[in-house]
Image (cartoon, rainbow, N blue to C red; front, side, top):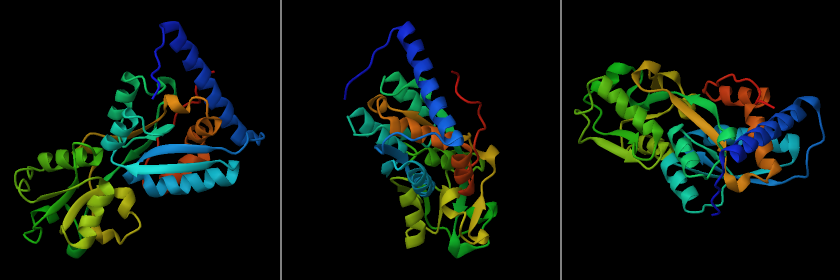
Length: 269
């Protein structure tokens, strides 16, 4: 993958250029401007956001004709794929740390980053409902499923929650690690674990008694950042999709899946 190196003045130029590009595209959604010819966007998307991403992509395609091709996975593994030349143009991370790394690696355009969603963690245990904080002390939990904290931000949040509750050592030898948050949920549904820490967005549609919504002060905020990769700098559809995610229509879709969004001012022109 081609690497990009900028001087300070050049970087300022690109910040202005891409900020203006996204602002113009965003205005086109509200003003009814004619969309550019239909194109394809290749997106690396955190597993927890898969369902919301599908809904966003369908709405975006209906509005513009552009198509989104998605590769879901754990944020850490997707980051590694980008570094190794994976064919992606935008990155929807489950945290902000890996976006920082992409900027440092000069694989993404700093001026295009934003927090597209703030996630919530939930303890899911359908066989033990009603589920509450005290459920974690139940002797019925032989195995607890969490996403691998080395590659999945929701796994980090789960570990922080256990530590705050004083239960990290209690589950030391009873933890089943999922490769990503999707597999973590599968472990619970398959019976491989009686309970698991998953994304609230995954279980929001289920019976409320099957999960406990973890308080936000139990772990660091799960700020999920998006960014345009250097490989997508010339793809108008990729720039348009990031603008759509930030639009009012896009934010309503994201909120409907249990995320909160950070209301931001339009990019500087």
